[in-house]
Amino acid sequence: MTTQPTAERIPTPARGPLPQGAASARRTPNHVACVMDGNGRWAQSRSLPRTSGHSAAEAAVIDVIEAARNSGVRWLSLYAFSTENWDRPGTEVDFLMRLVRRVVRKHALLLHARGVRCRFLGASDPRIPPALAQDIEDLMTLTADNRRMTLTVAFGHGGRRDIVEAARSLLRSGATADSVTEQSFAGHLPYPDTPDVDLVIRTSGEQRISNFMLWQVAYAEWIFPAVLWPDFRASHFLQCLHTYQQRDRRFGGVLTPDTGGPSS
Image 1 (cartoon, rainbow, N blue to C red):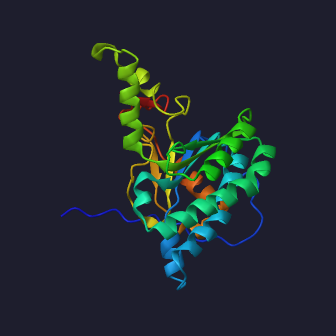
Image 2 (tube, rainbow, N blue to C red):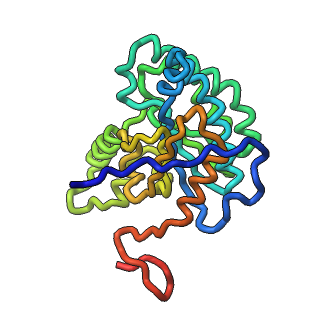
């Protein structure tokens, strides 16, 4: 009988100032992605409408962006809205569109001042309201030259759709079957300069990929804290970085005793 893995229990830390140097520079992941799960359950546990959970998620988003930037993470990706989420009730989808627009407009100048370059995966979806699409475009233009950290918001994103679109683009370029490599294929994905994800954090304890950046997470480490996303804070994020730093990444090989690095 196979035992199912349990979610990693990351204790809720005491509130207080962020400890200096809490996330060691030792093996700090270059690219961290977060599946922001648990908004609905957070609201349900408080007898609130699901929309209240989405509103409460804003504080977690800002806290994690600051924690990642201060820890030396160069790429941060947040899964905000999937291609499948369009099937949710229209009132909830409409609320999310208004909420994202408010958050984008509220924090645009702060993100720019912090040196954060903002990108959006899936924002070309025609179902996104024009006003929101324009605000997203304005934010990306405003922050395009920033290099302190790249924040990618997956909004209207689907990993399978990205792979299909990359295949179509490759075919349109005239590539022959024998000429296709992993590198050439990756060059047709959205934002091909995006590095592979090193660490994925999925909150709420659920253990699914959910069609998120399927190509980029191929060799990512996964951590599943039981904390619901609206309660997730910088200290939880730092604990996840610490857990990541304790792991040995072998990429399908074995660790060699002389260097400690992976070898096939």
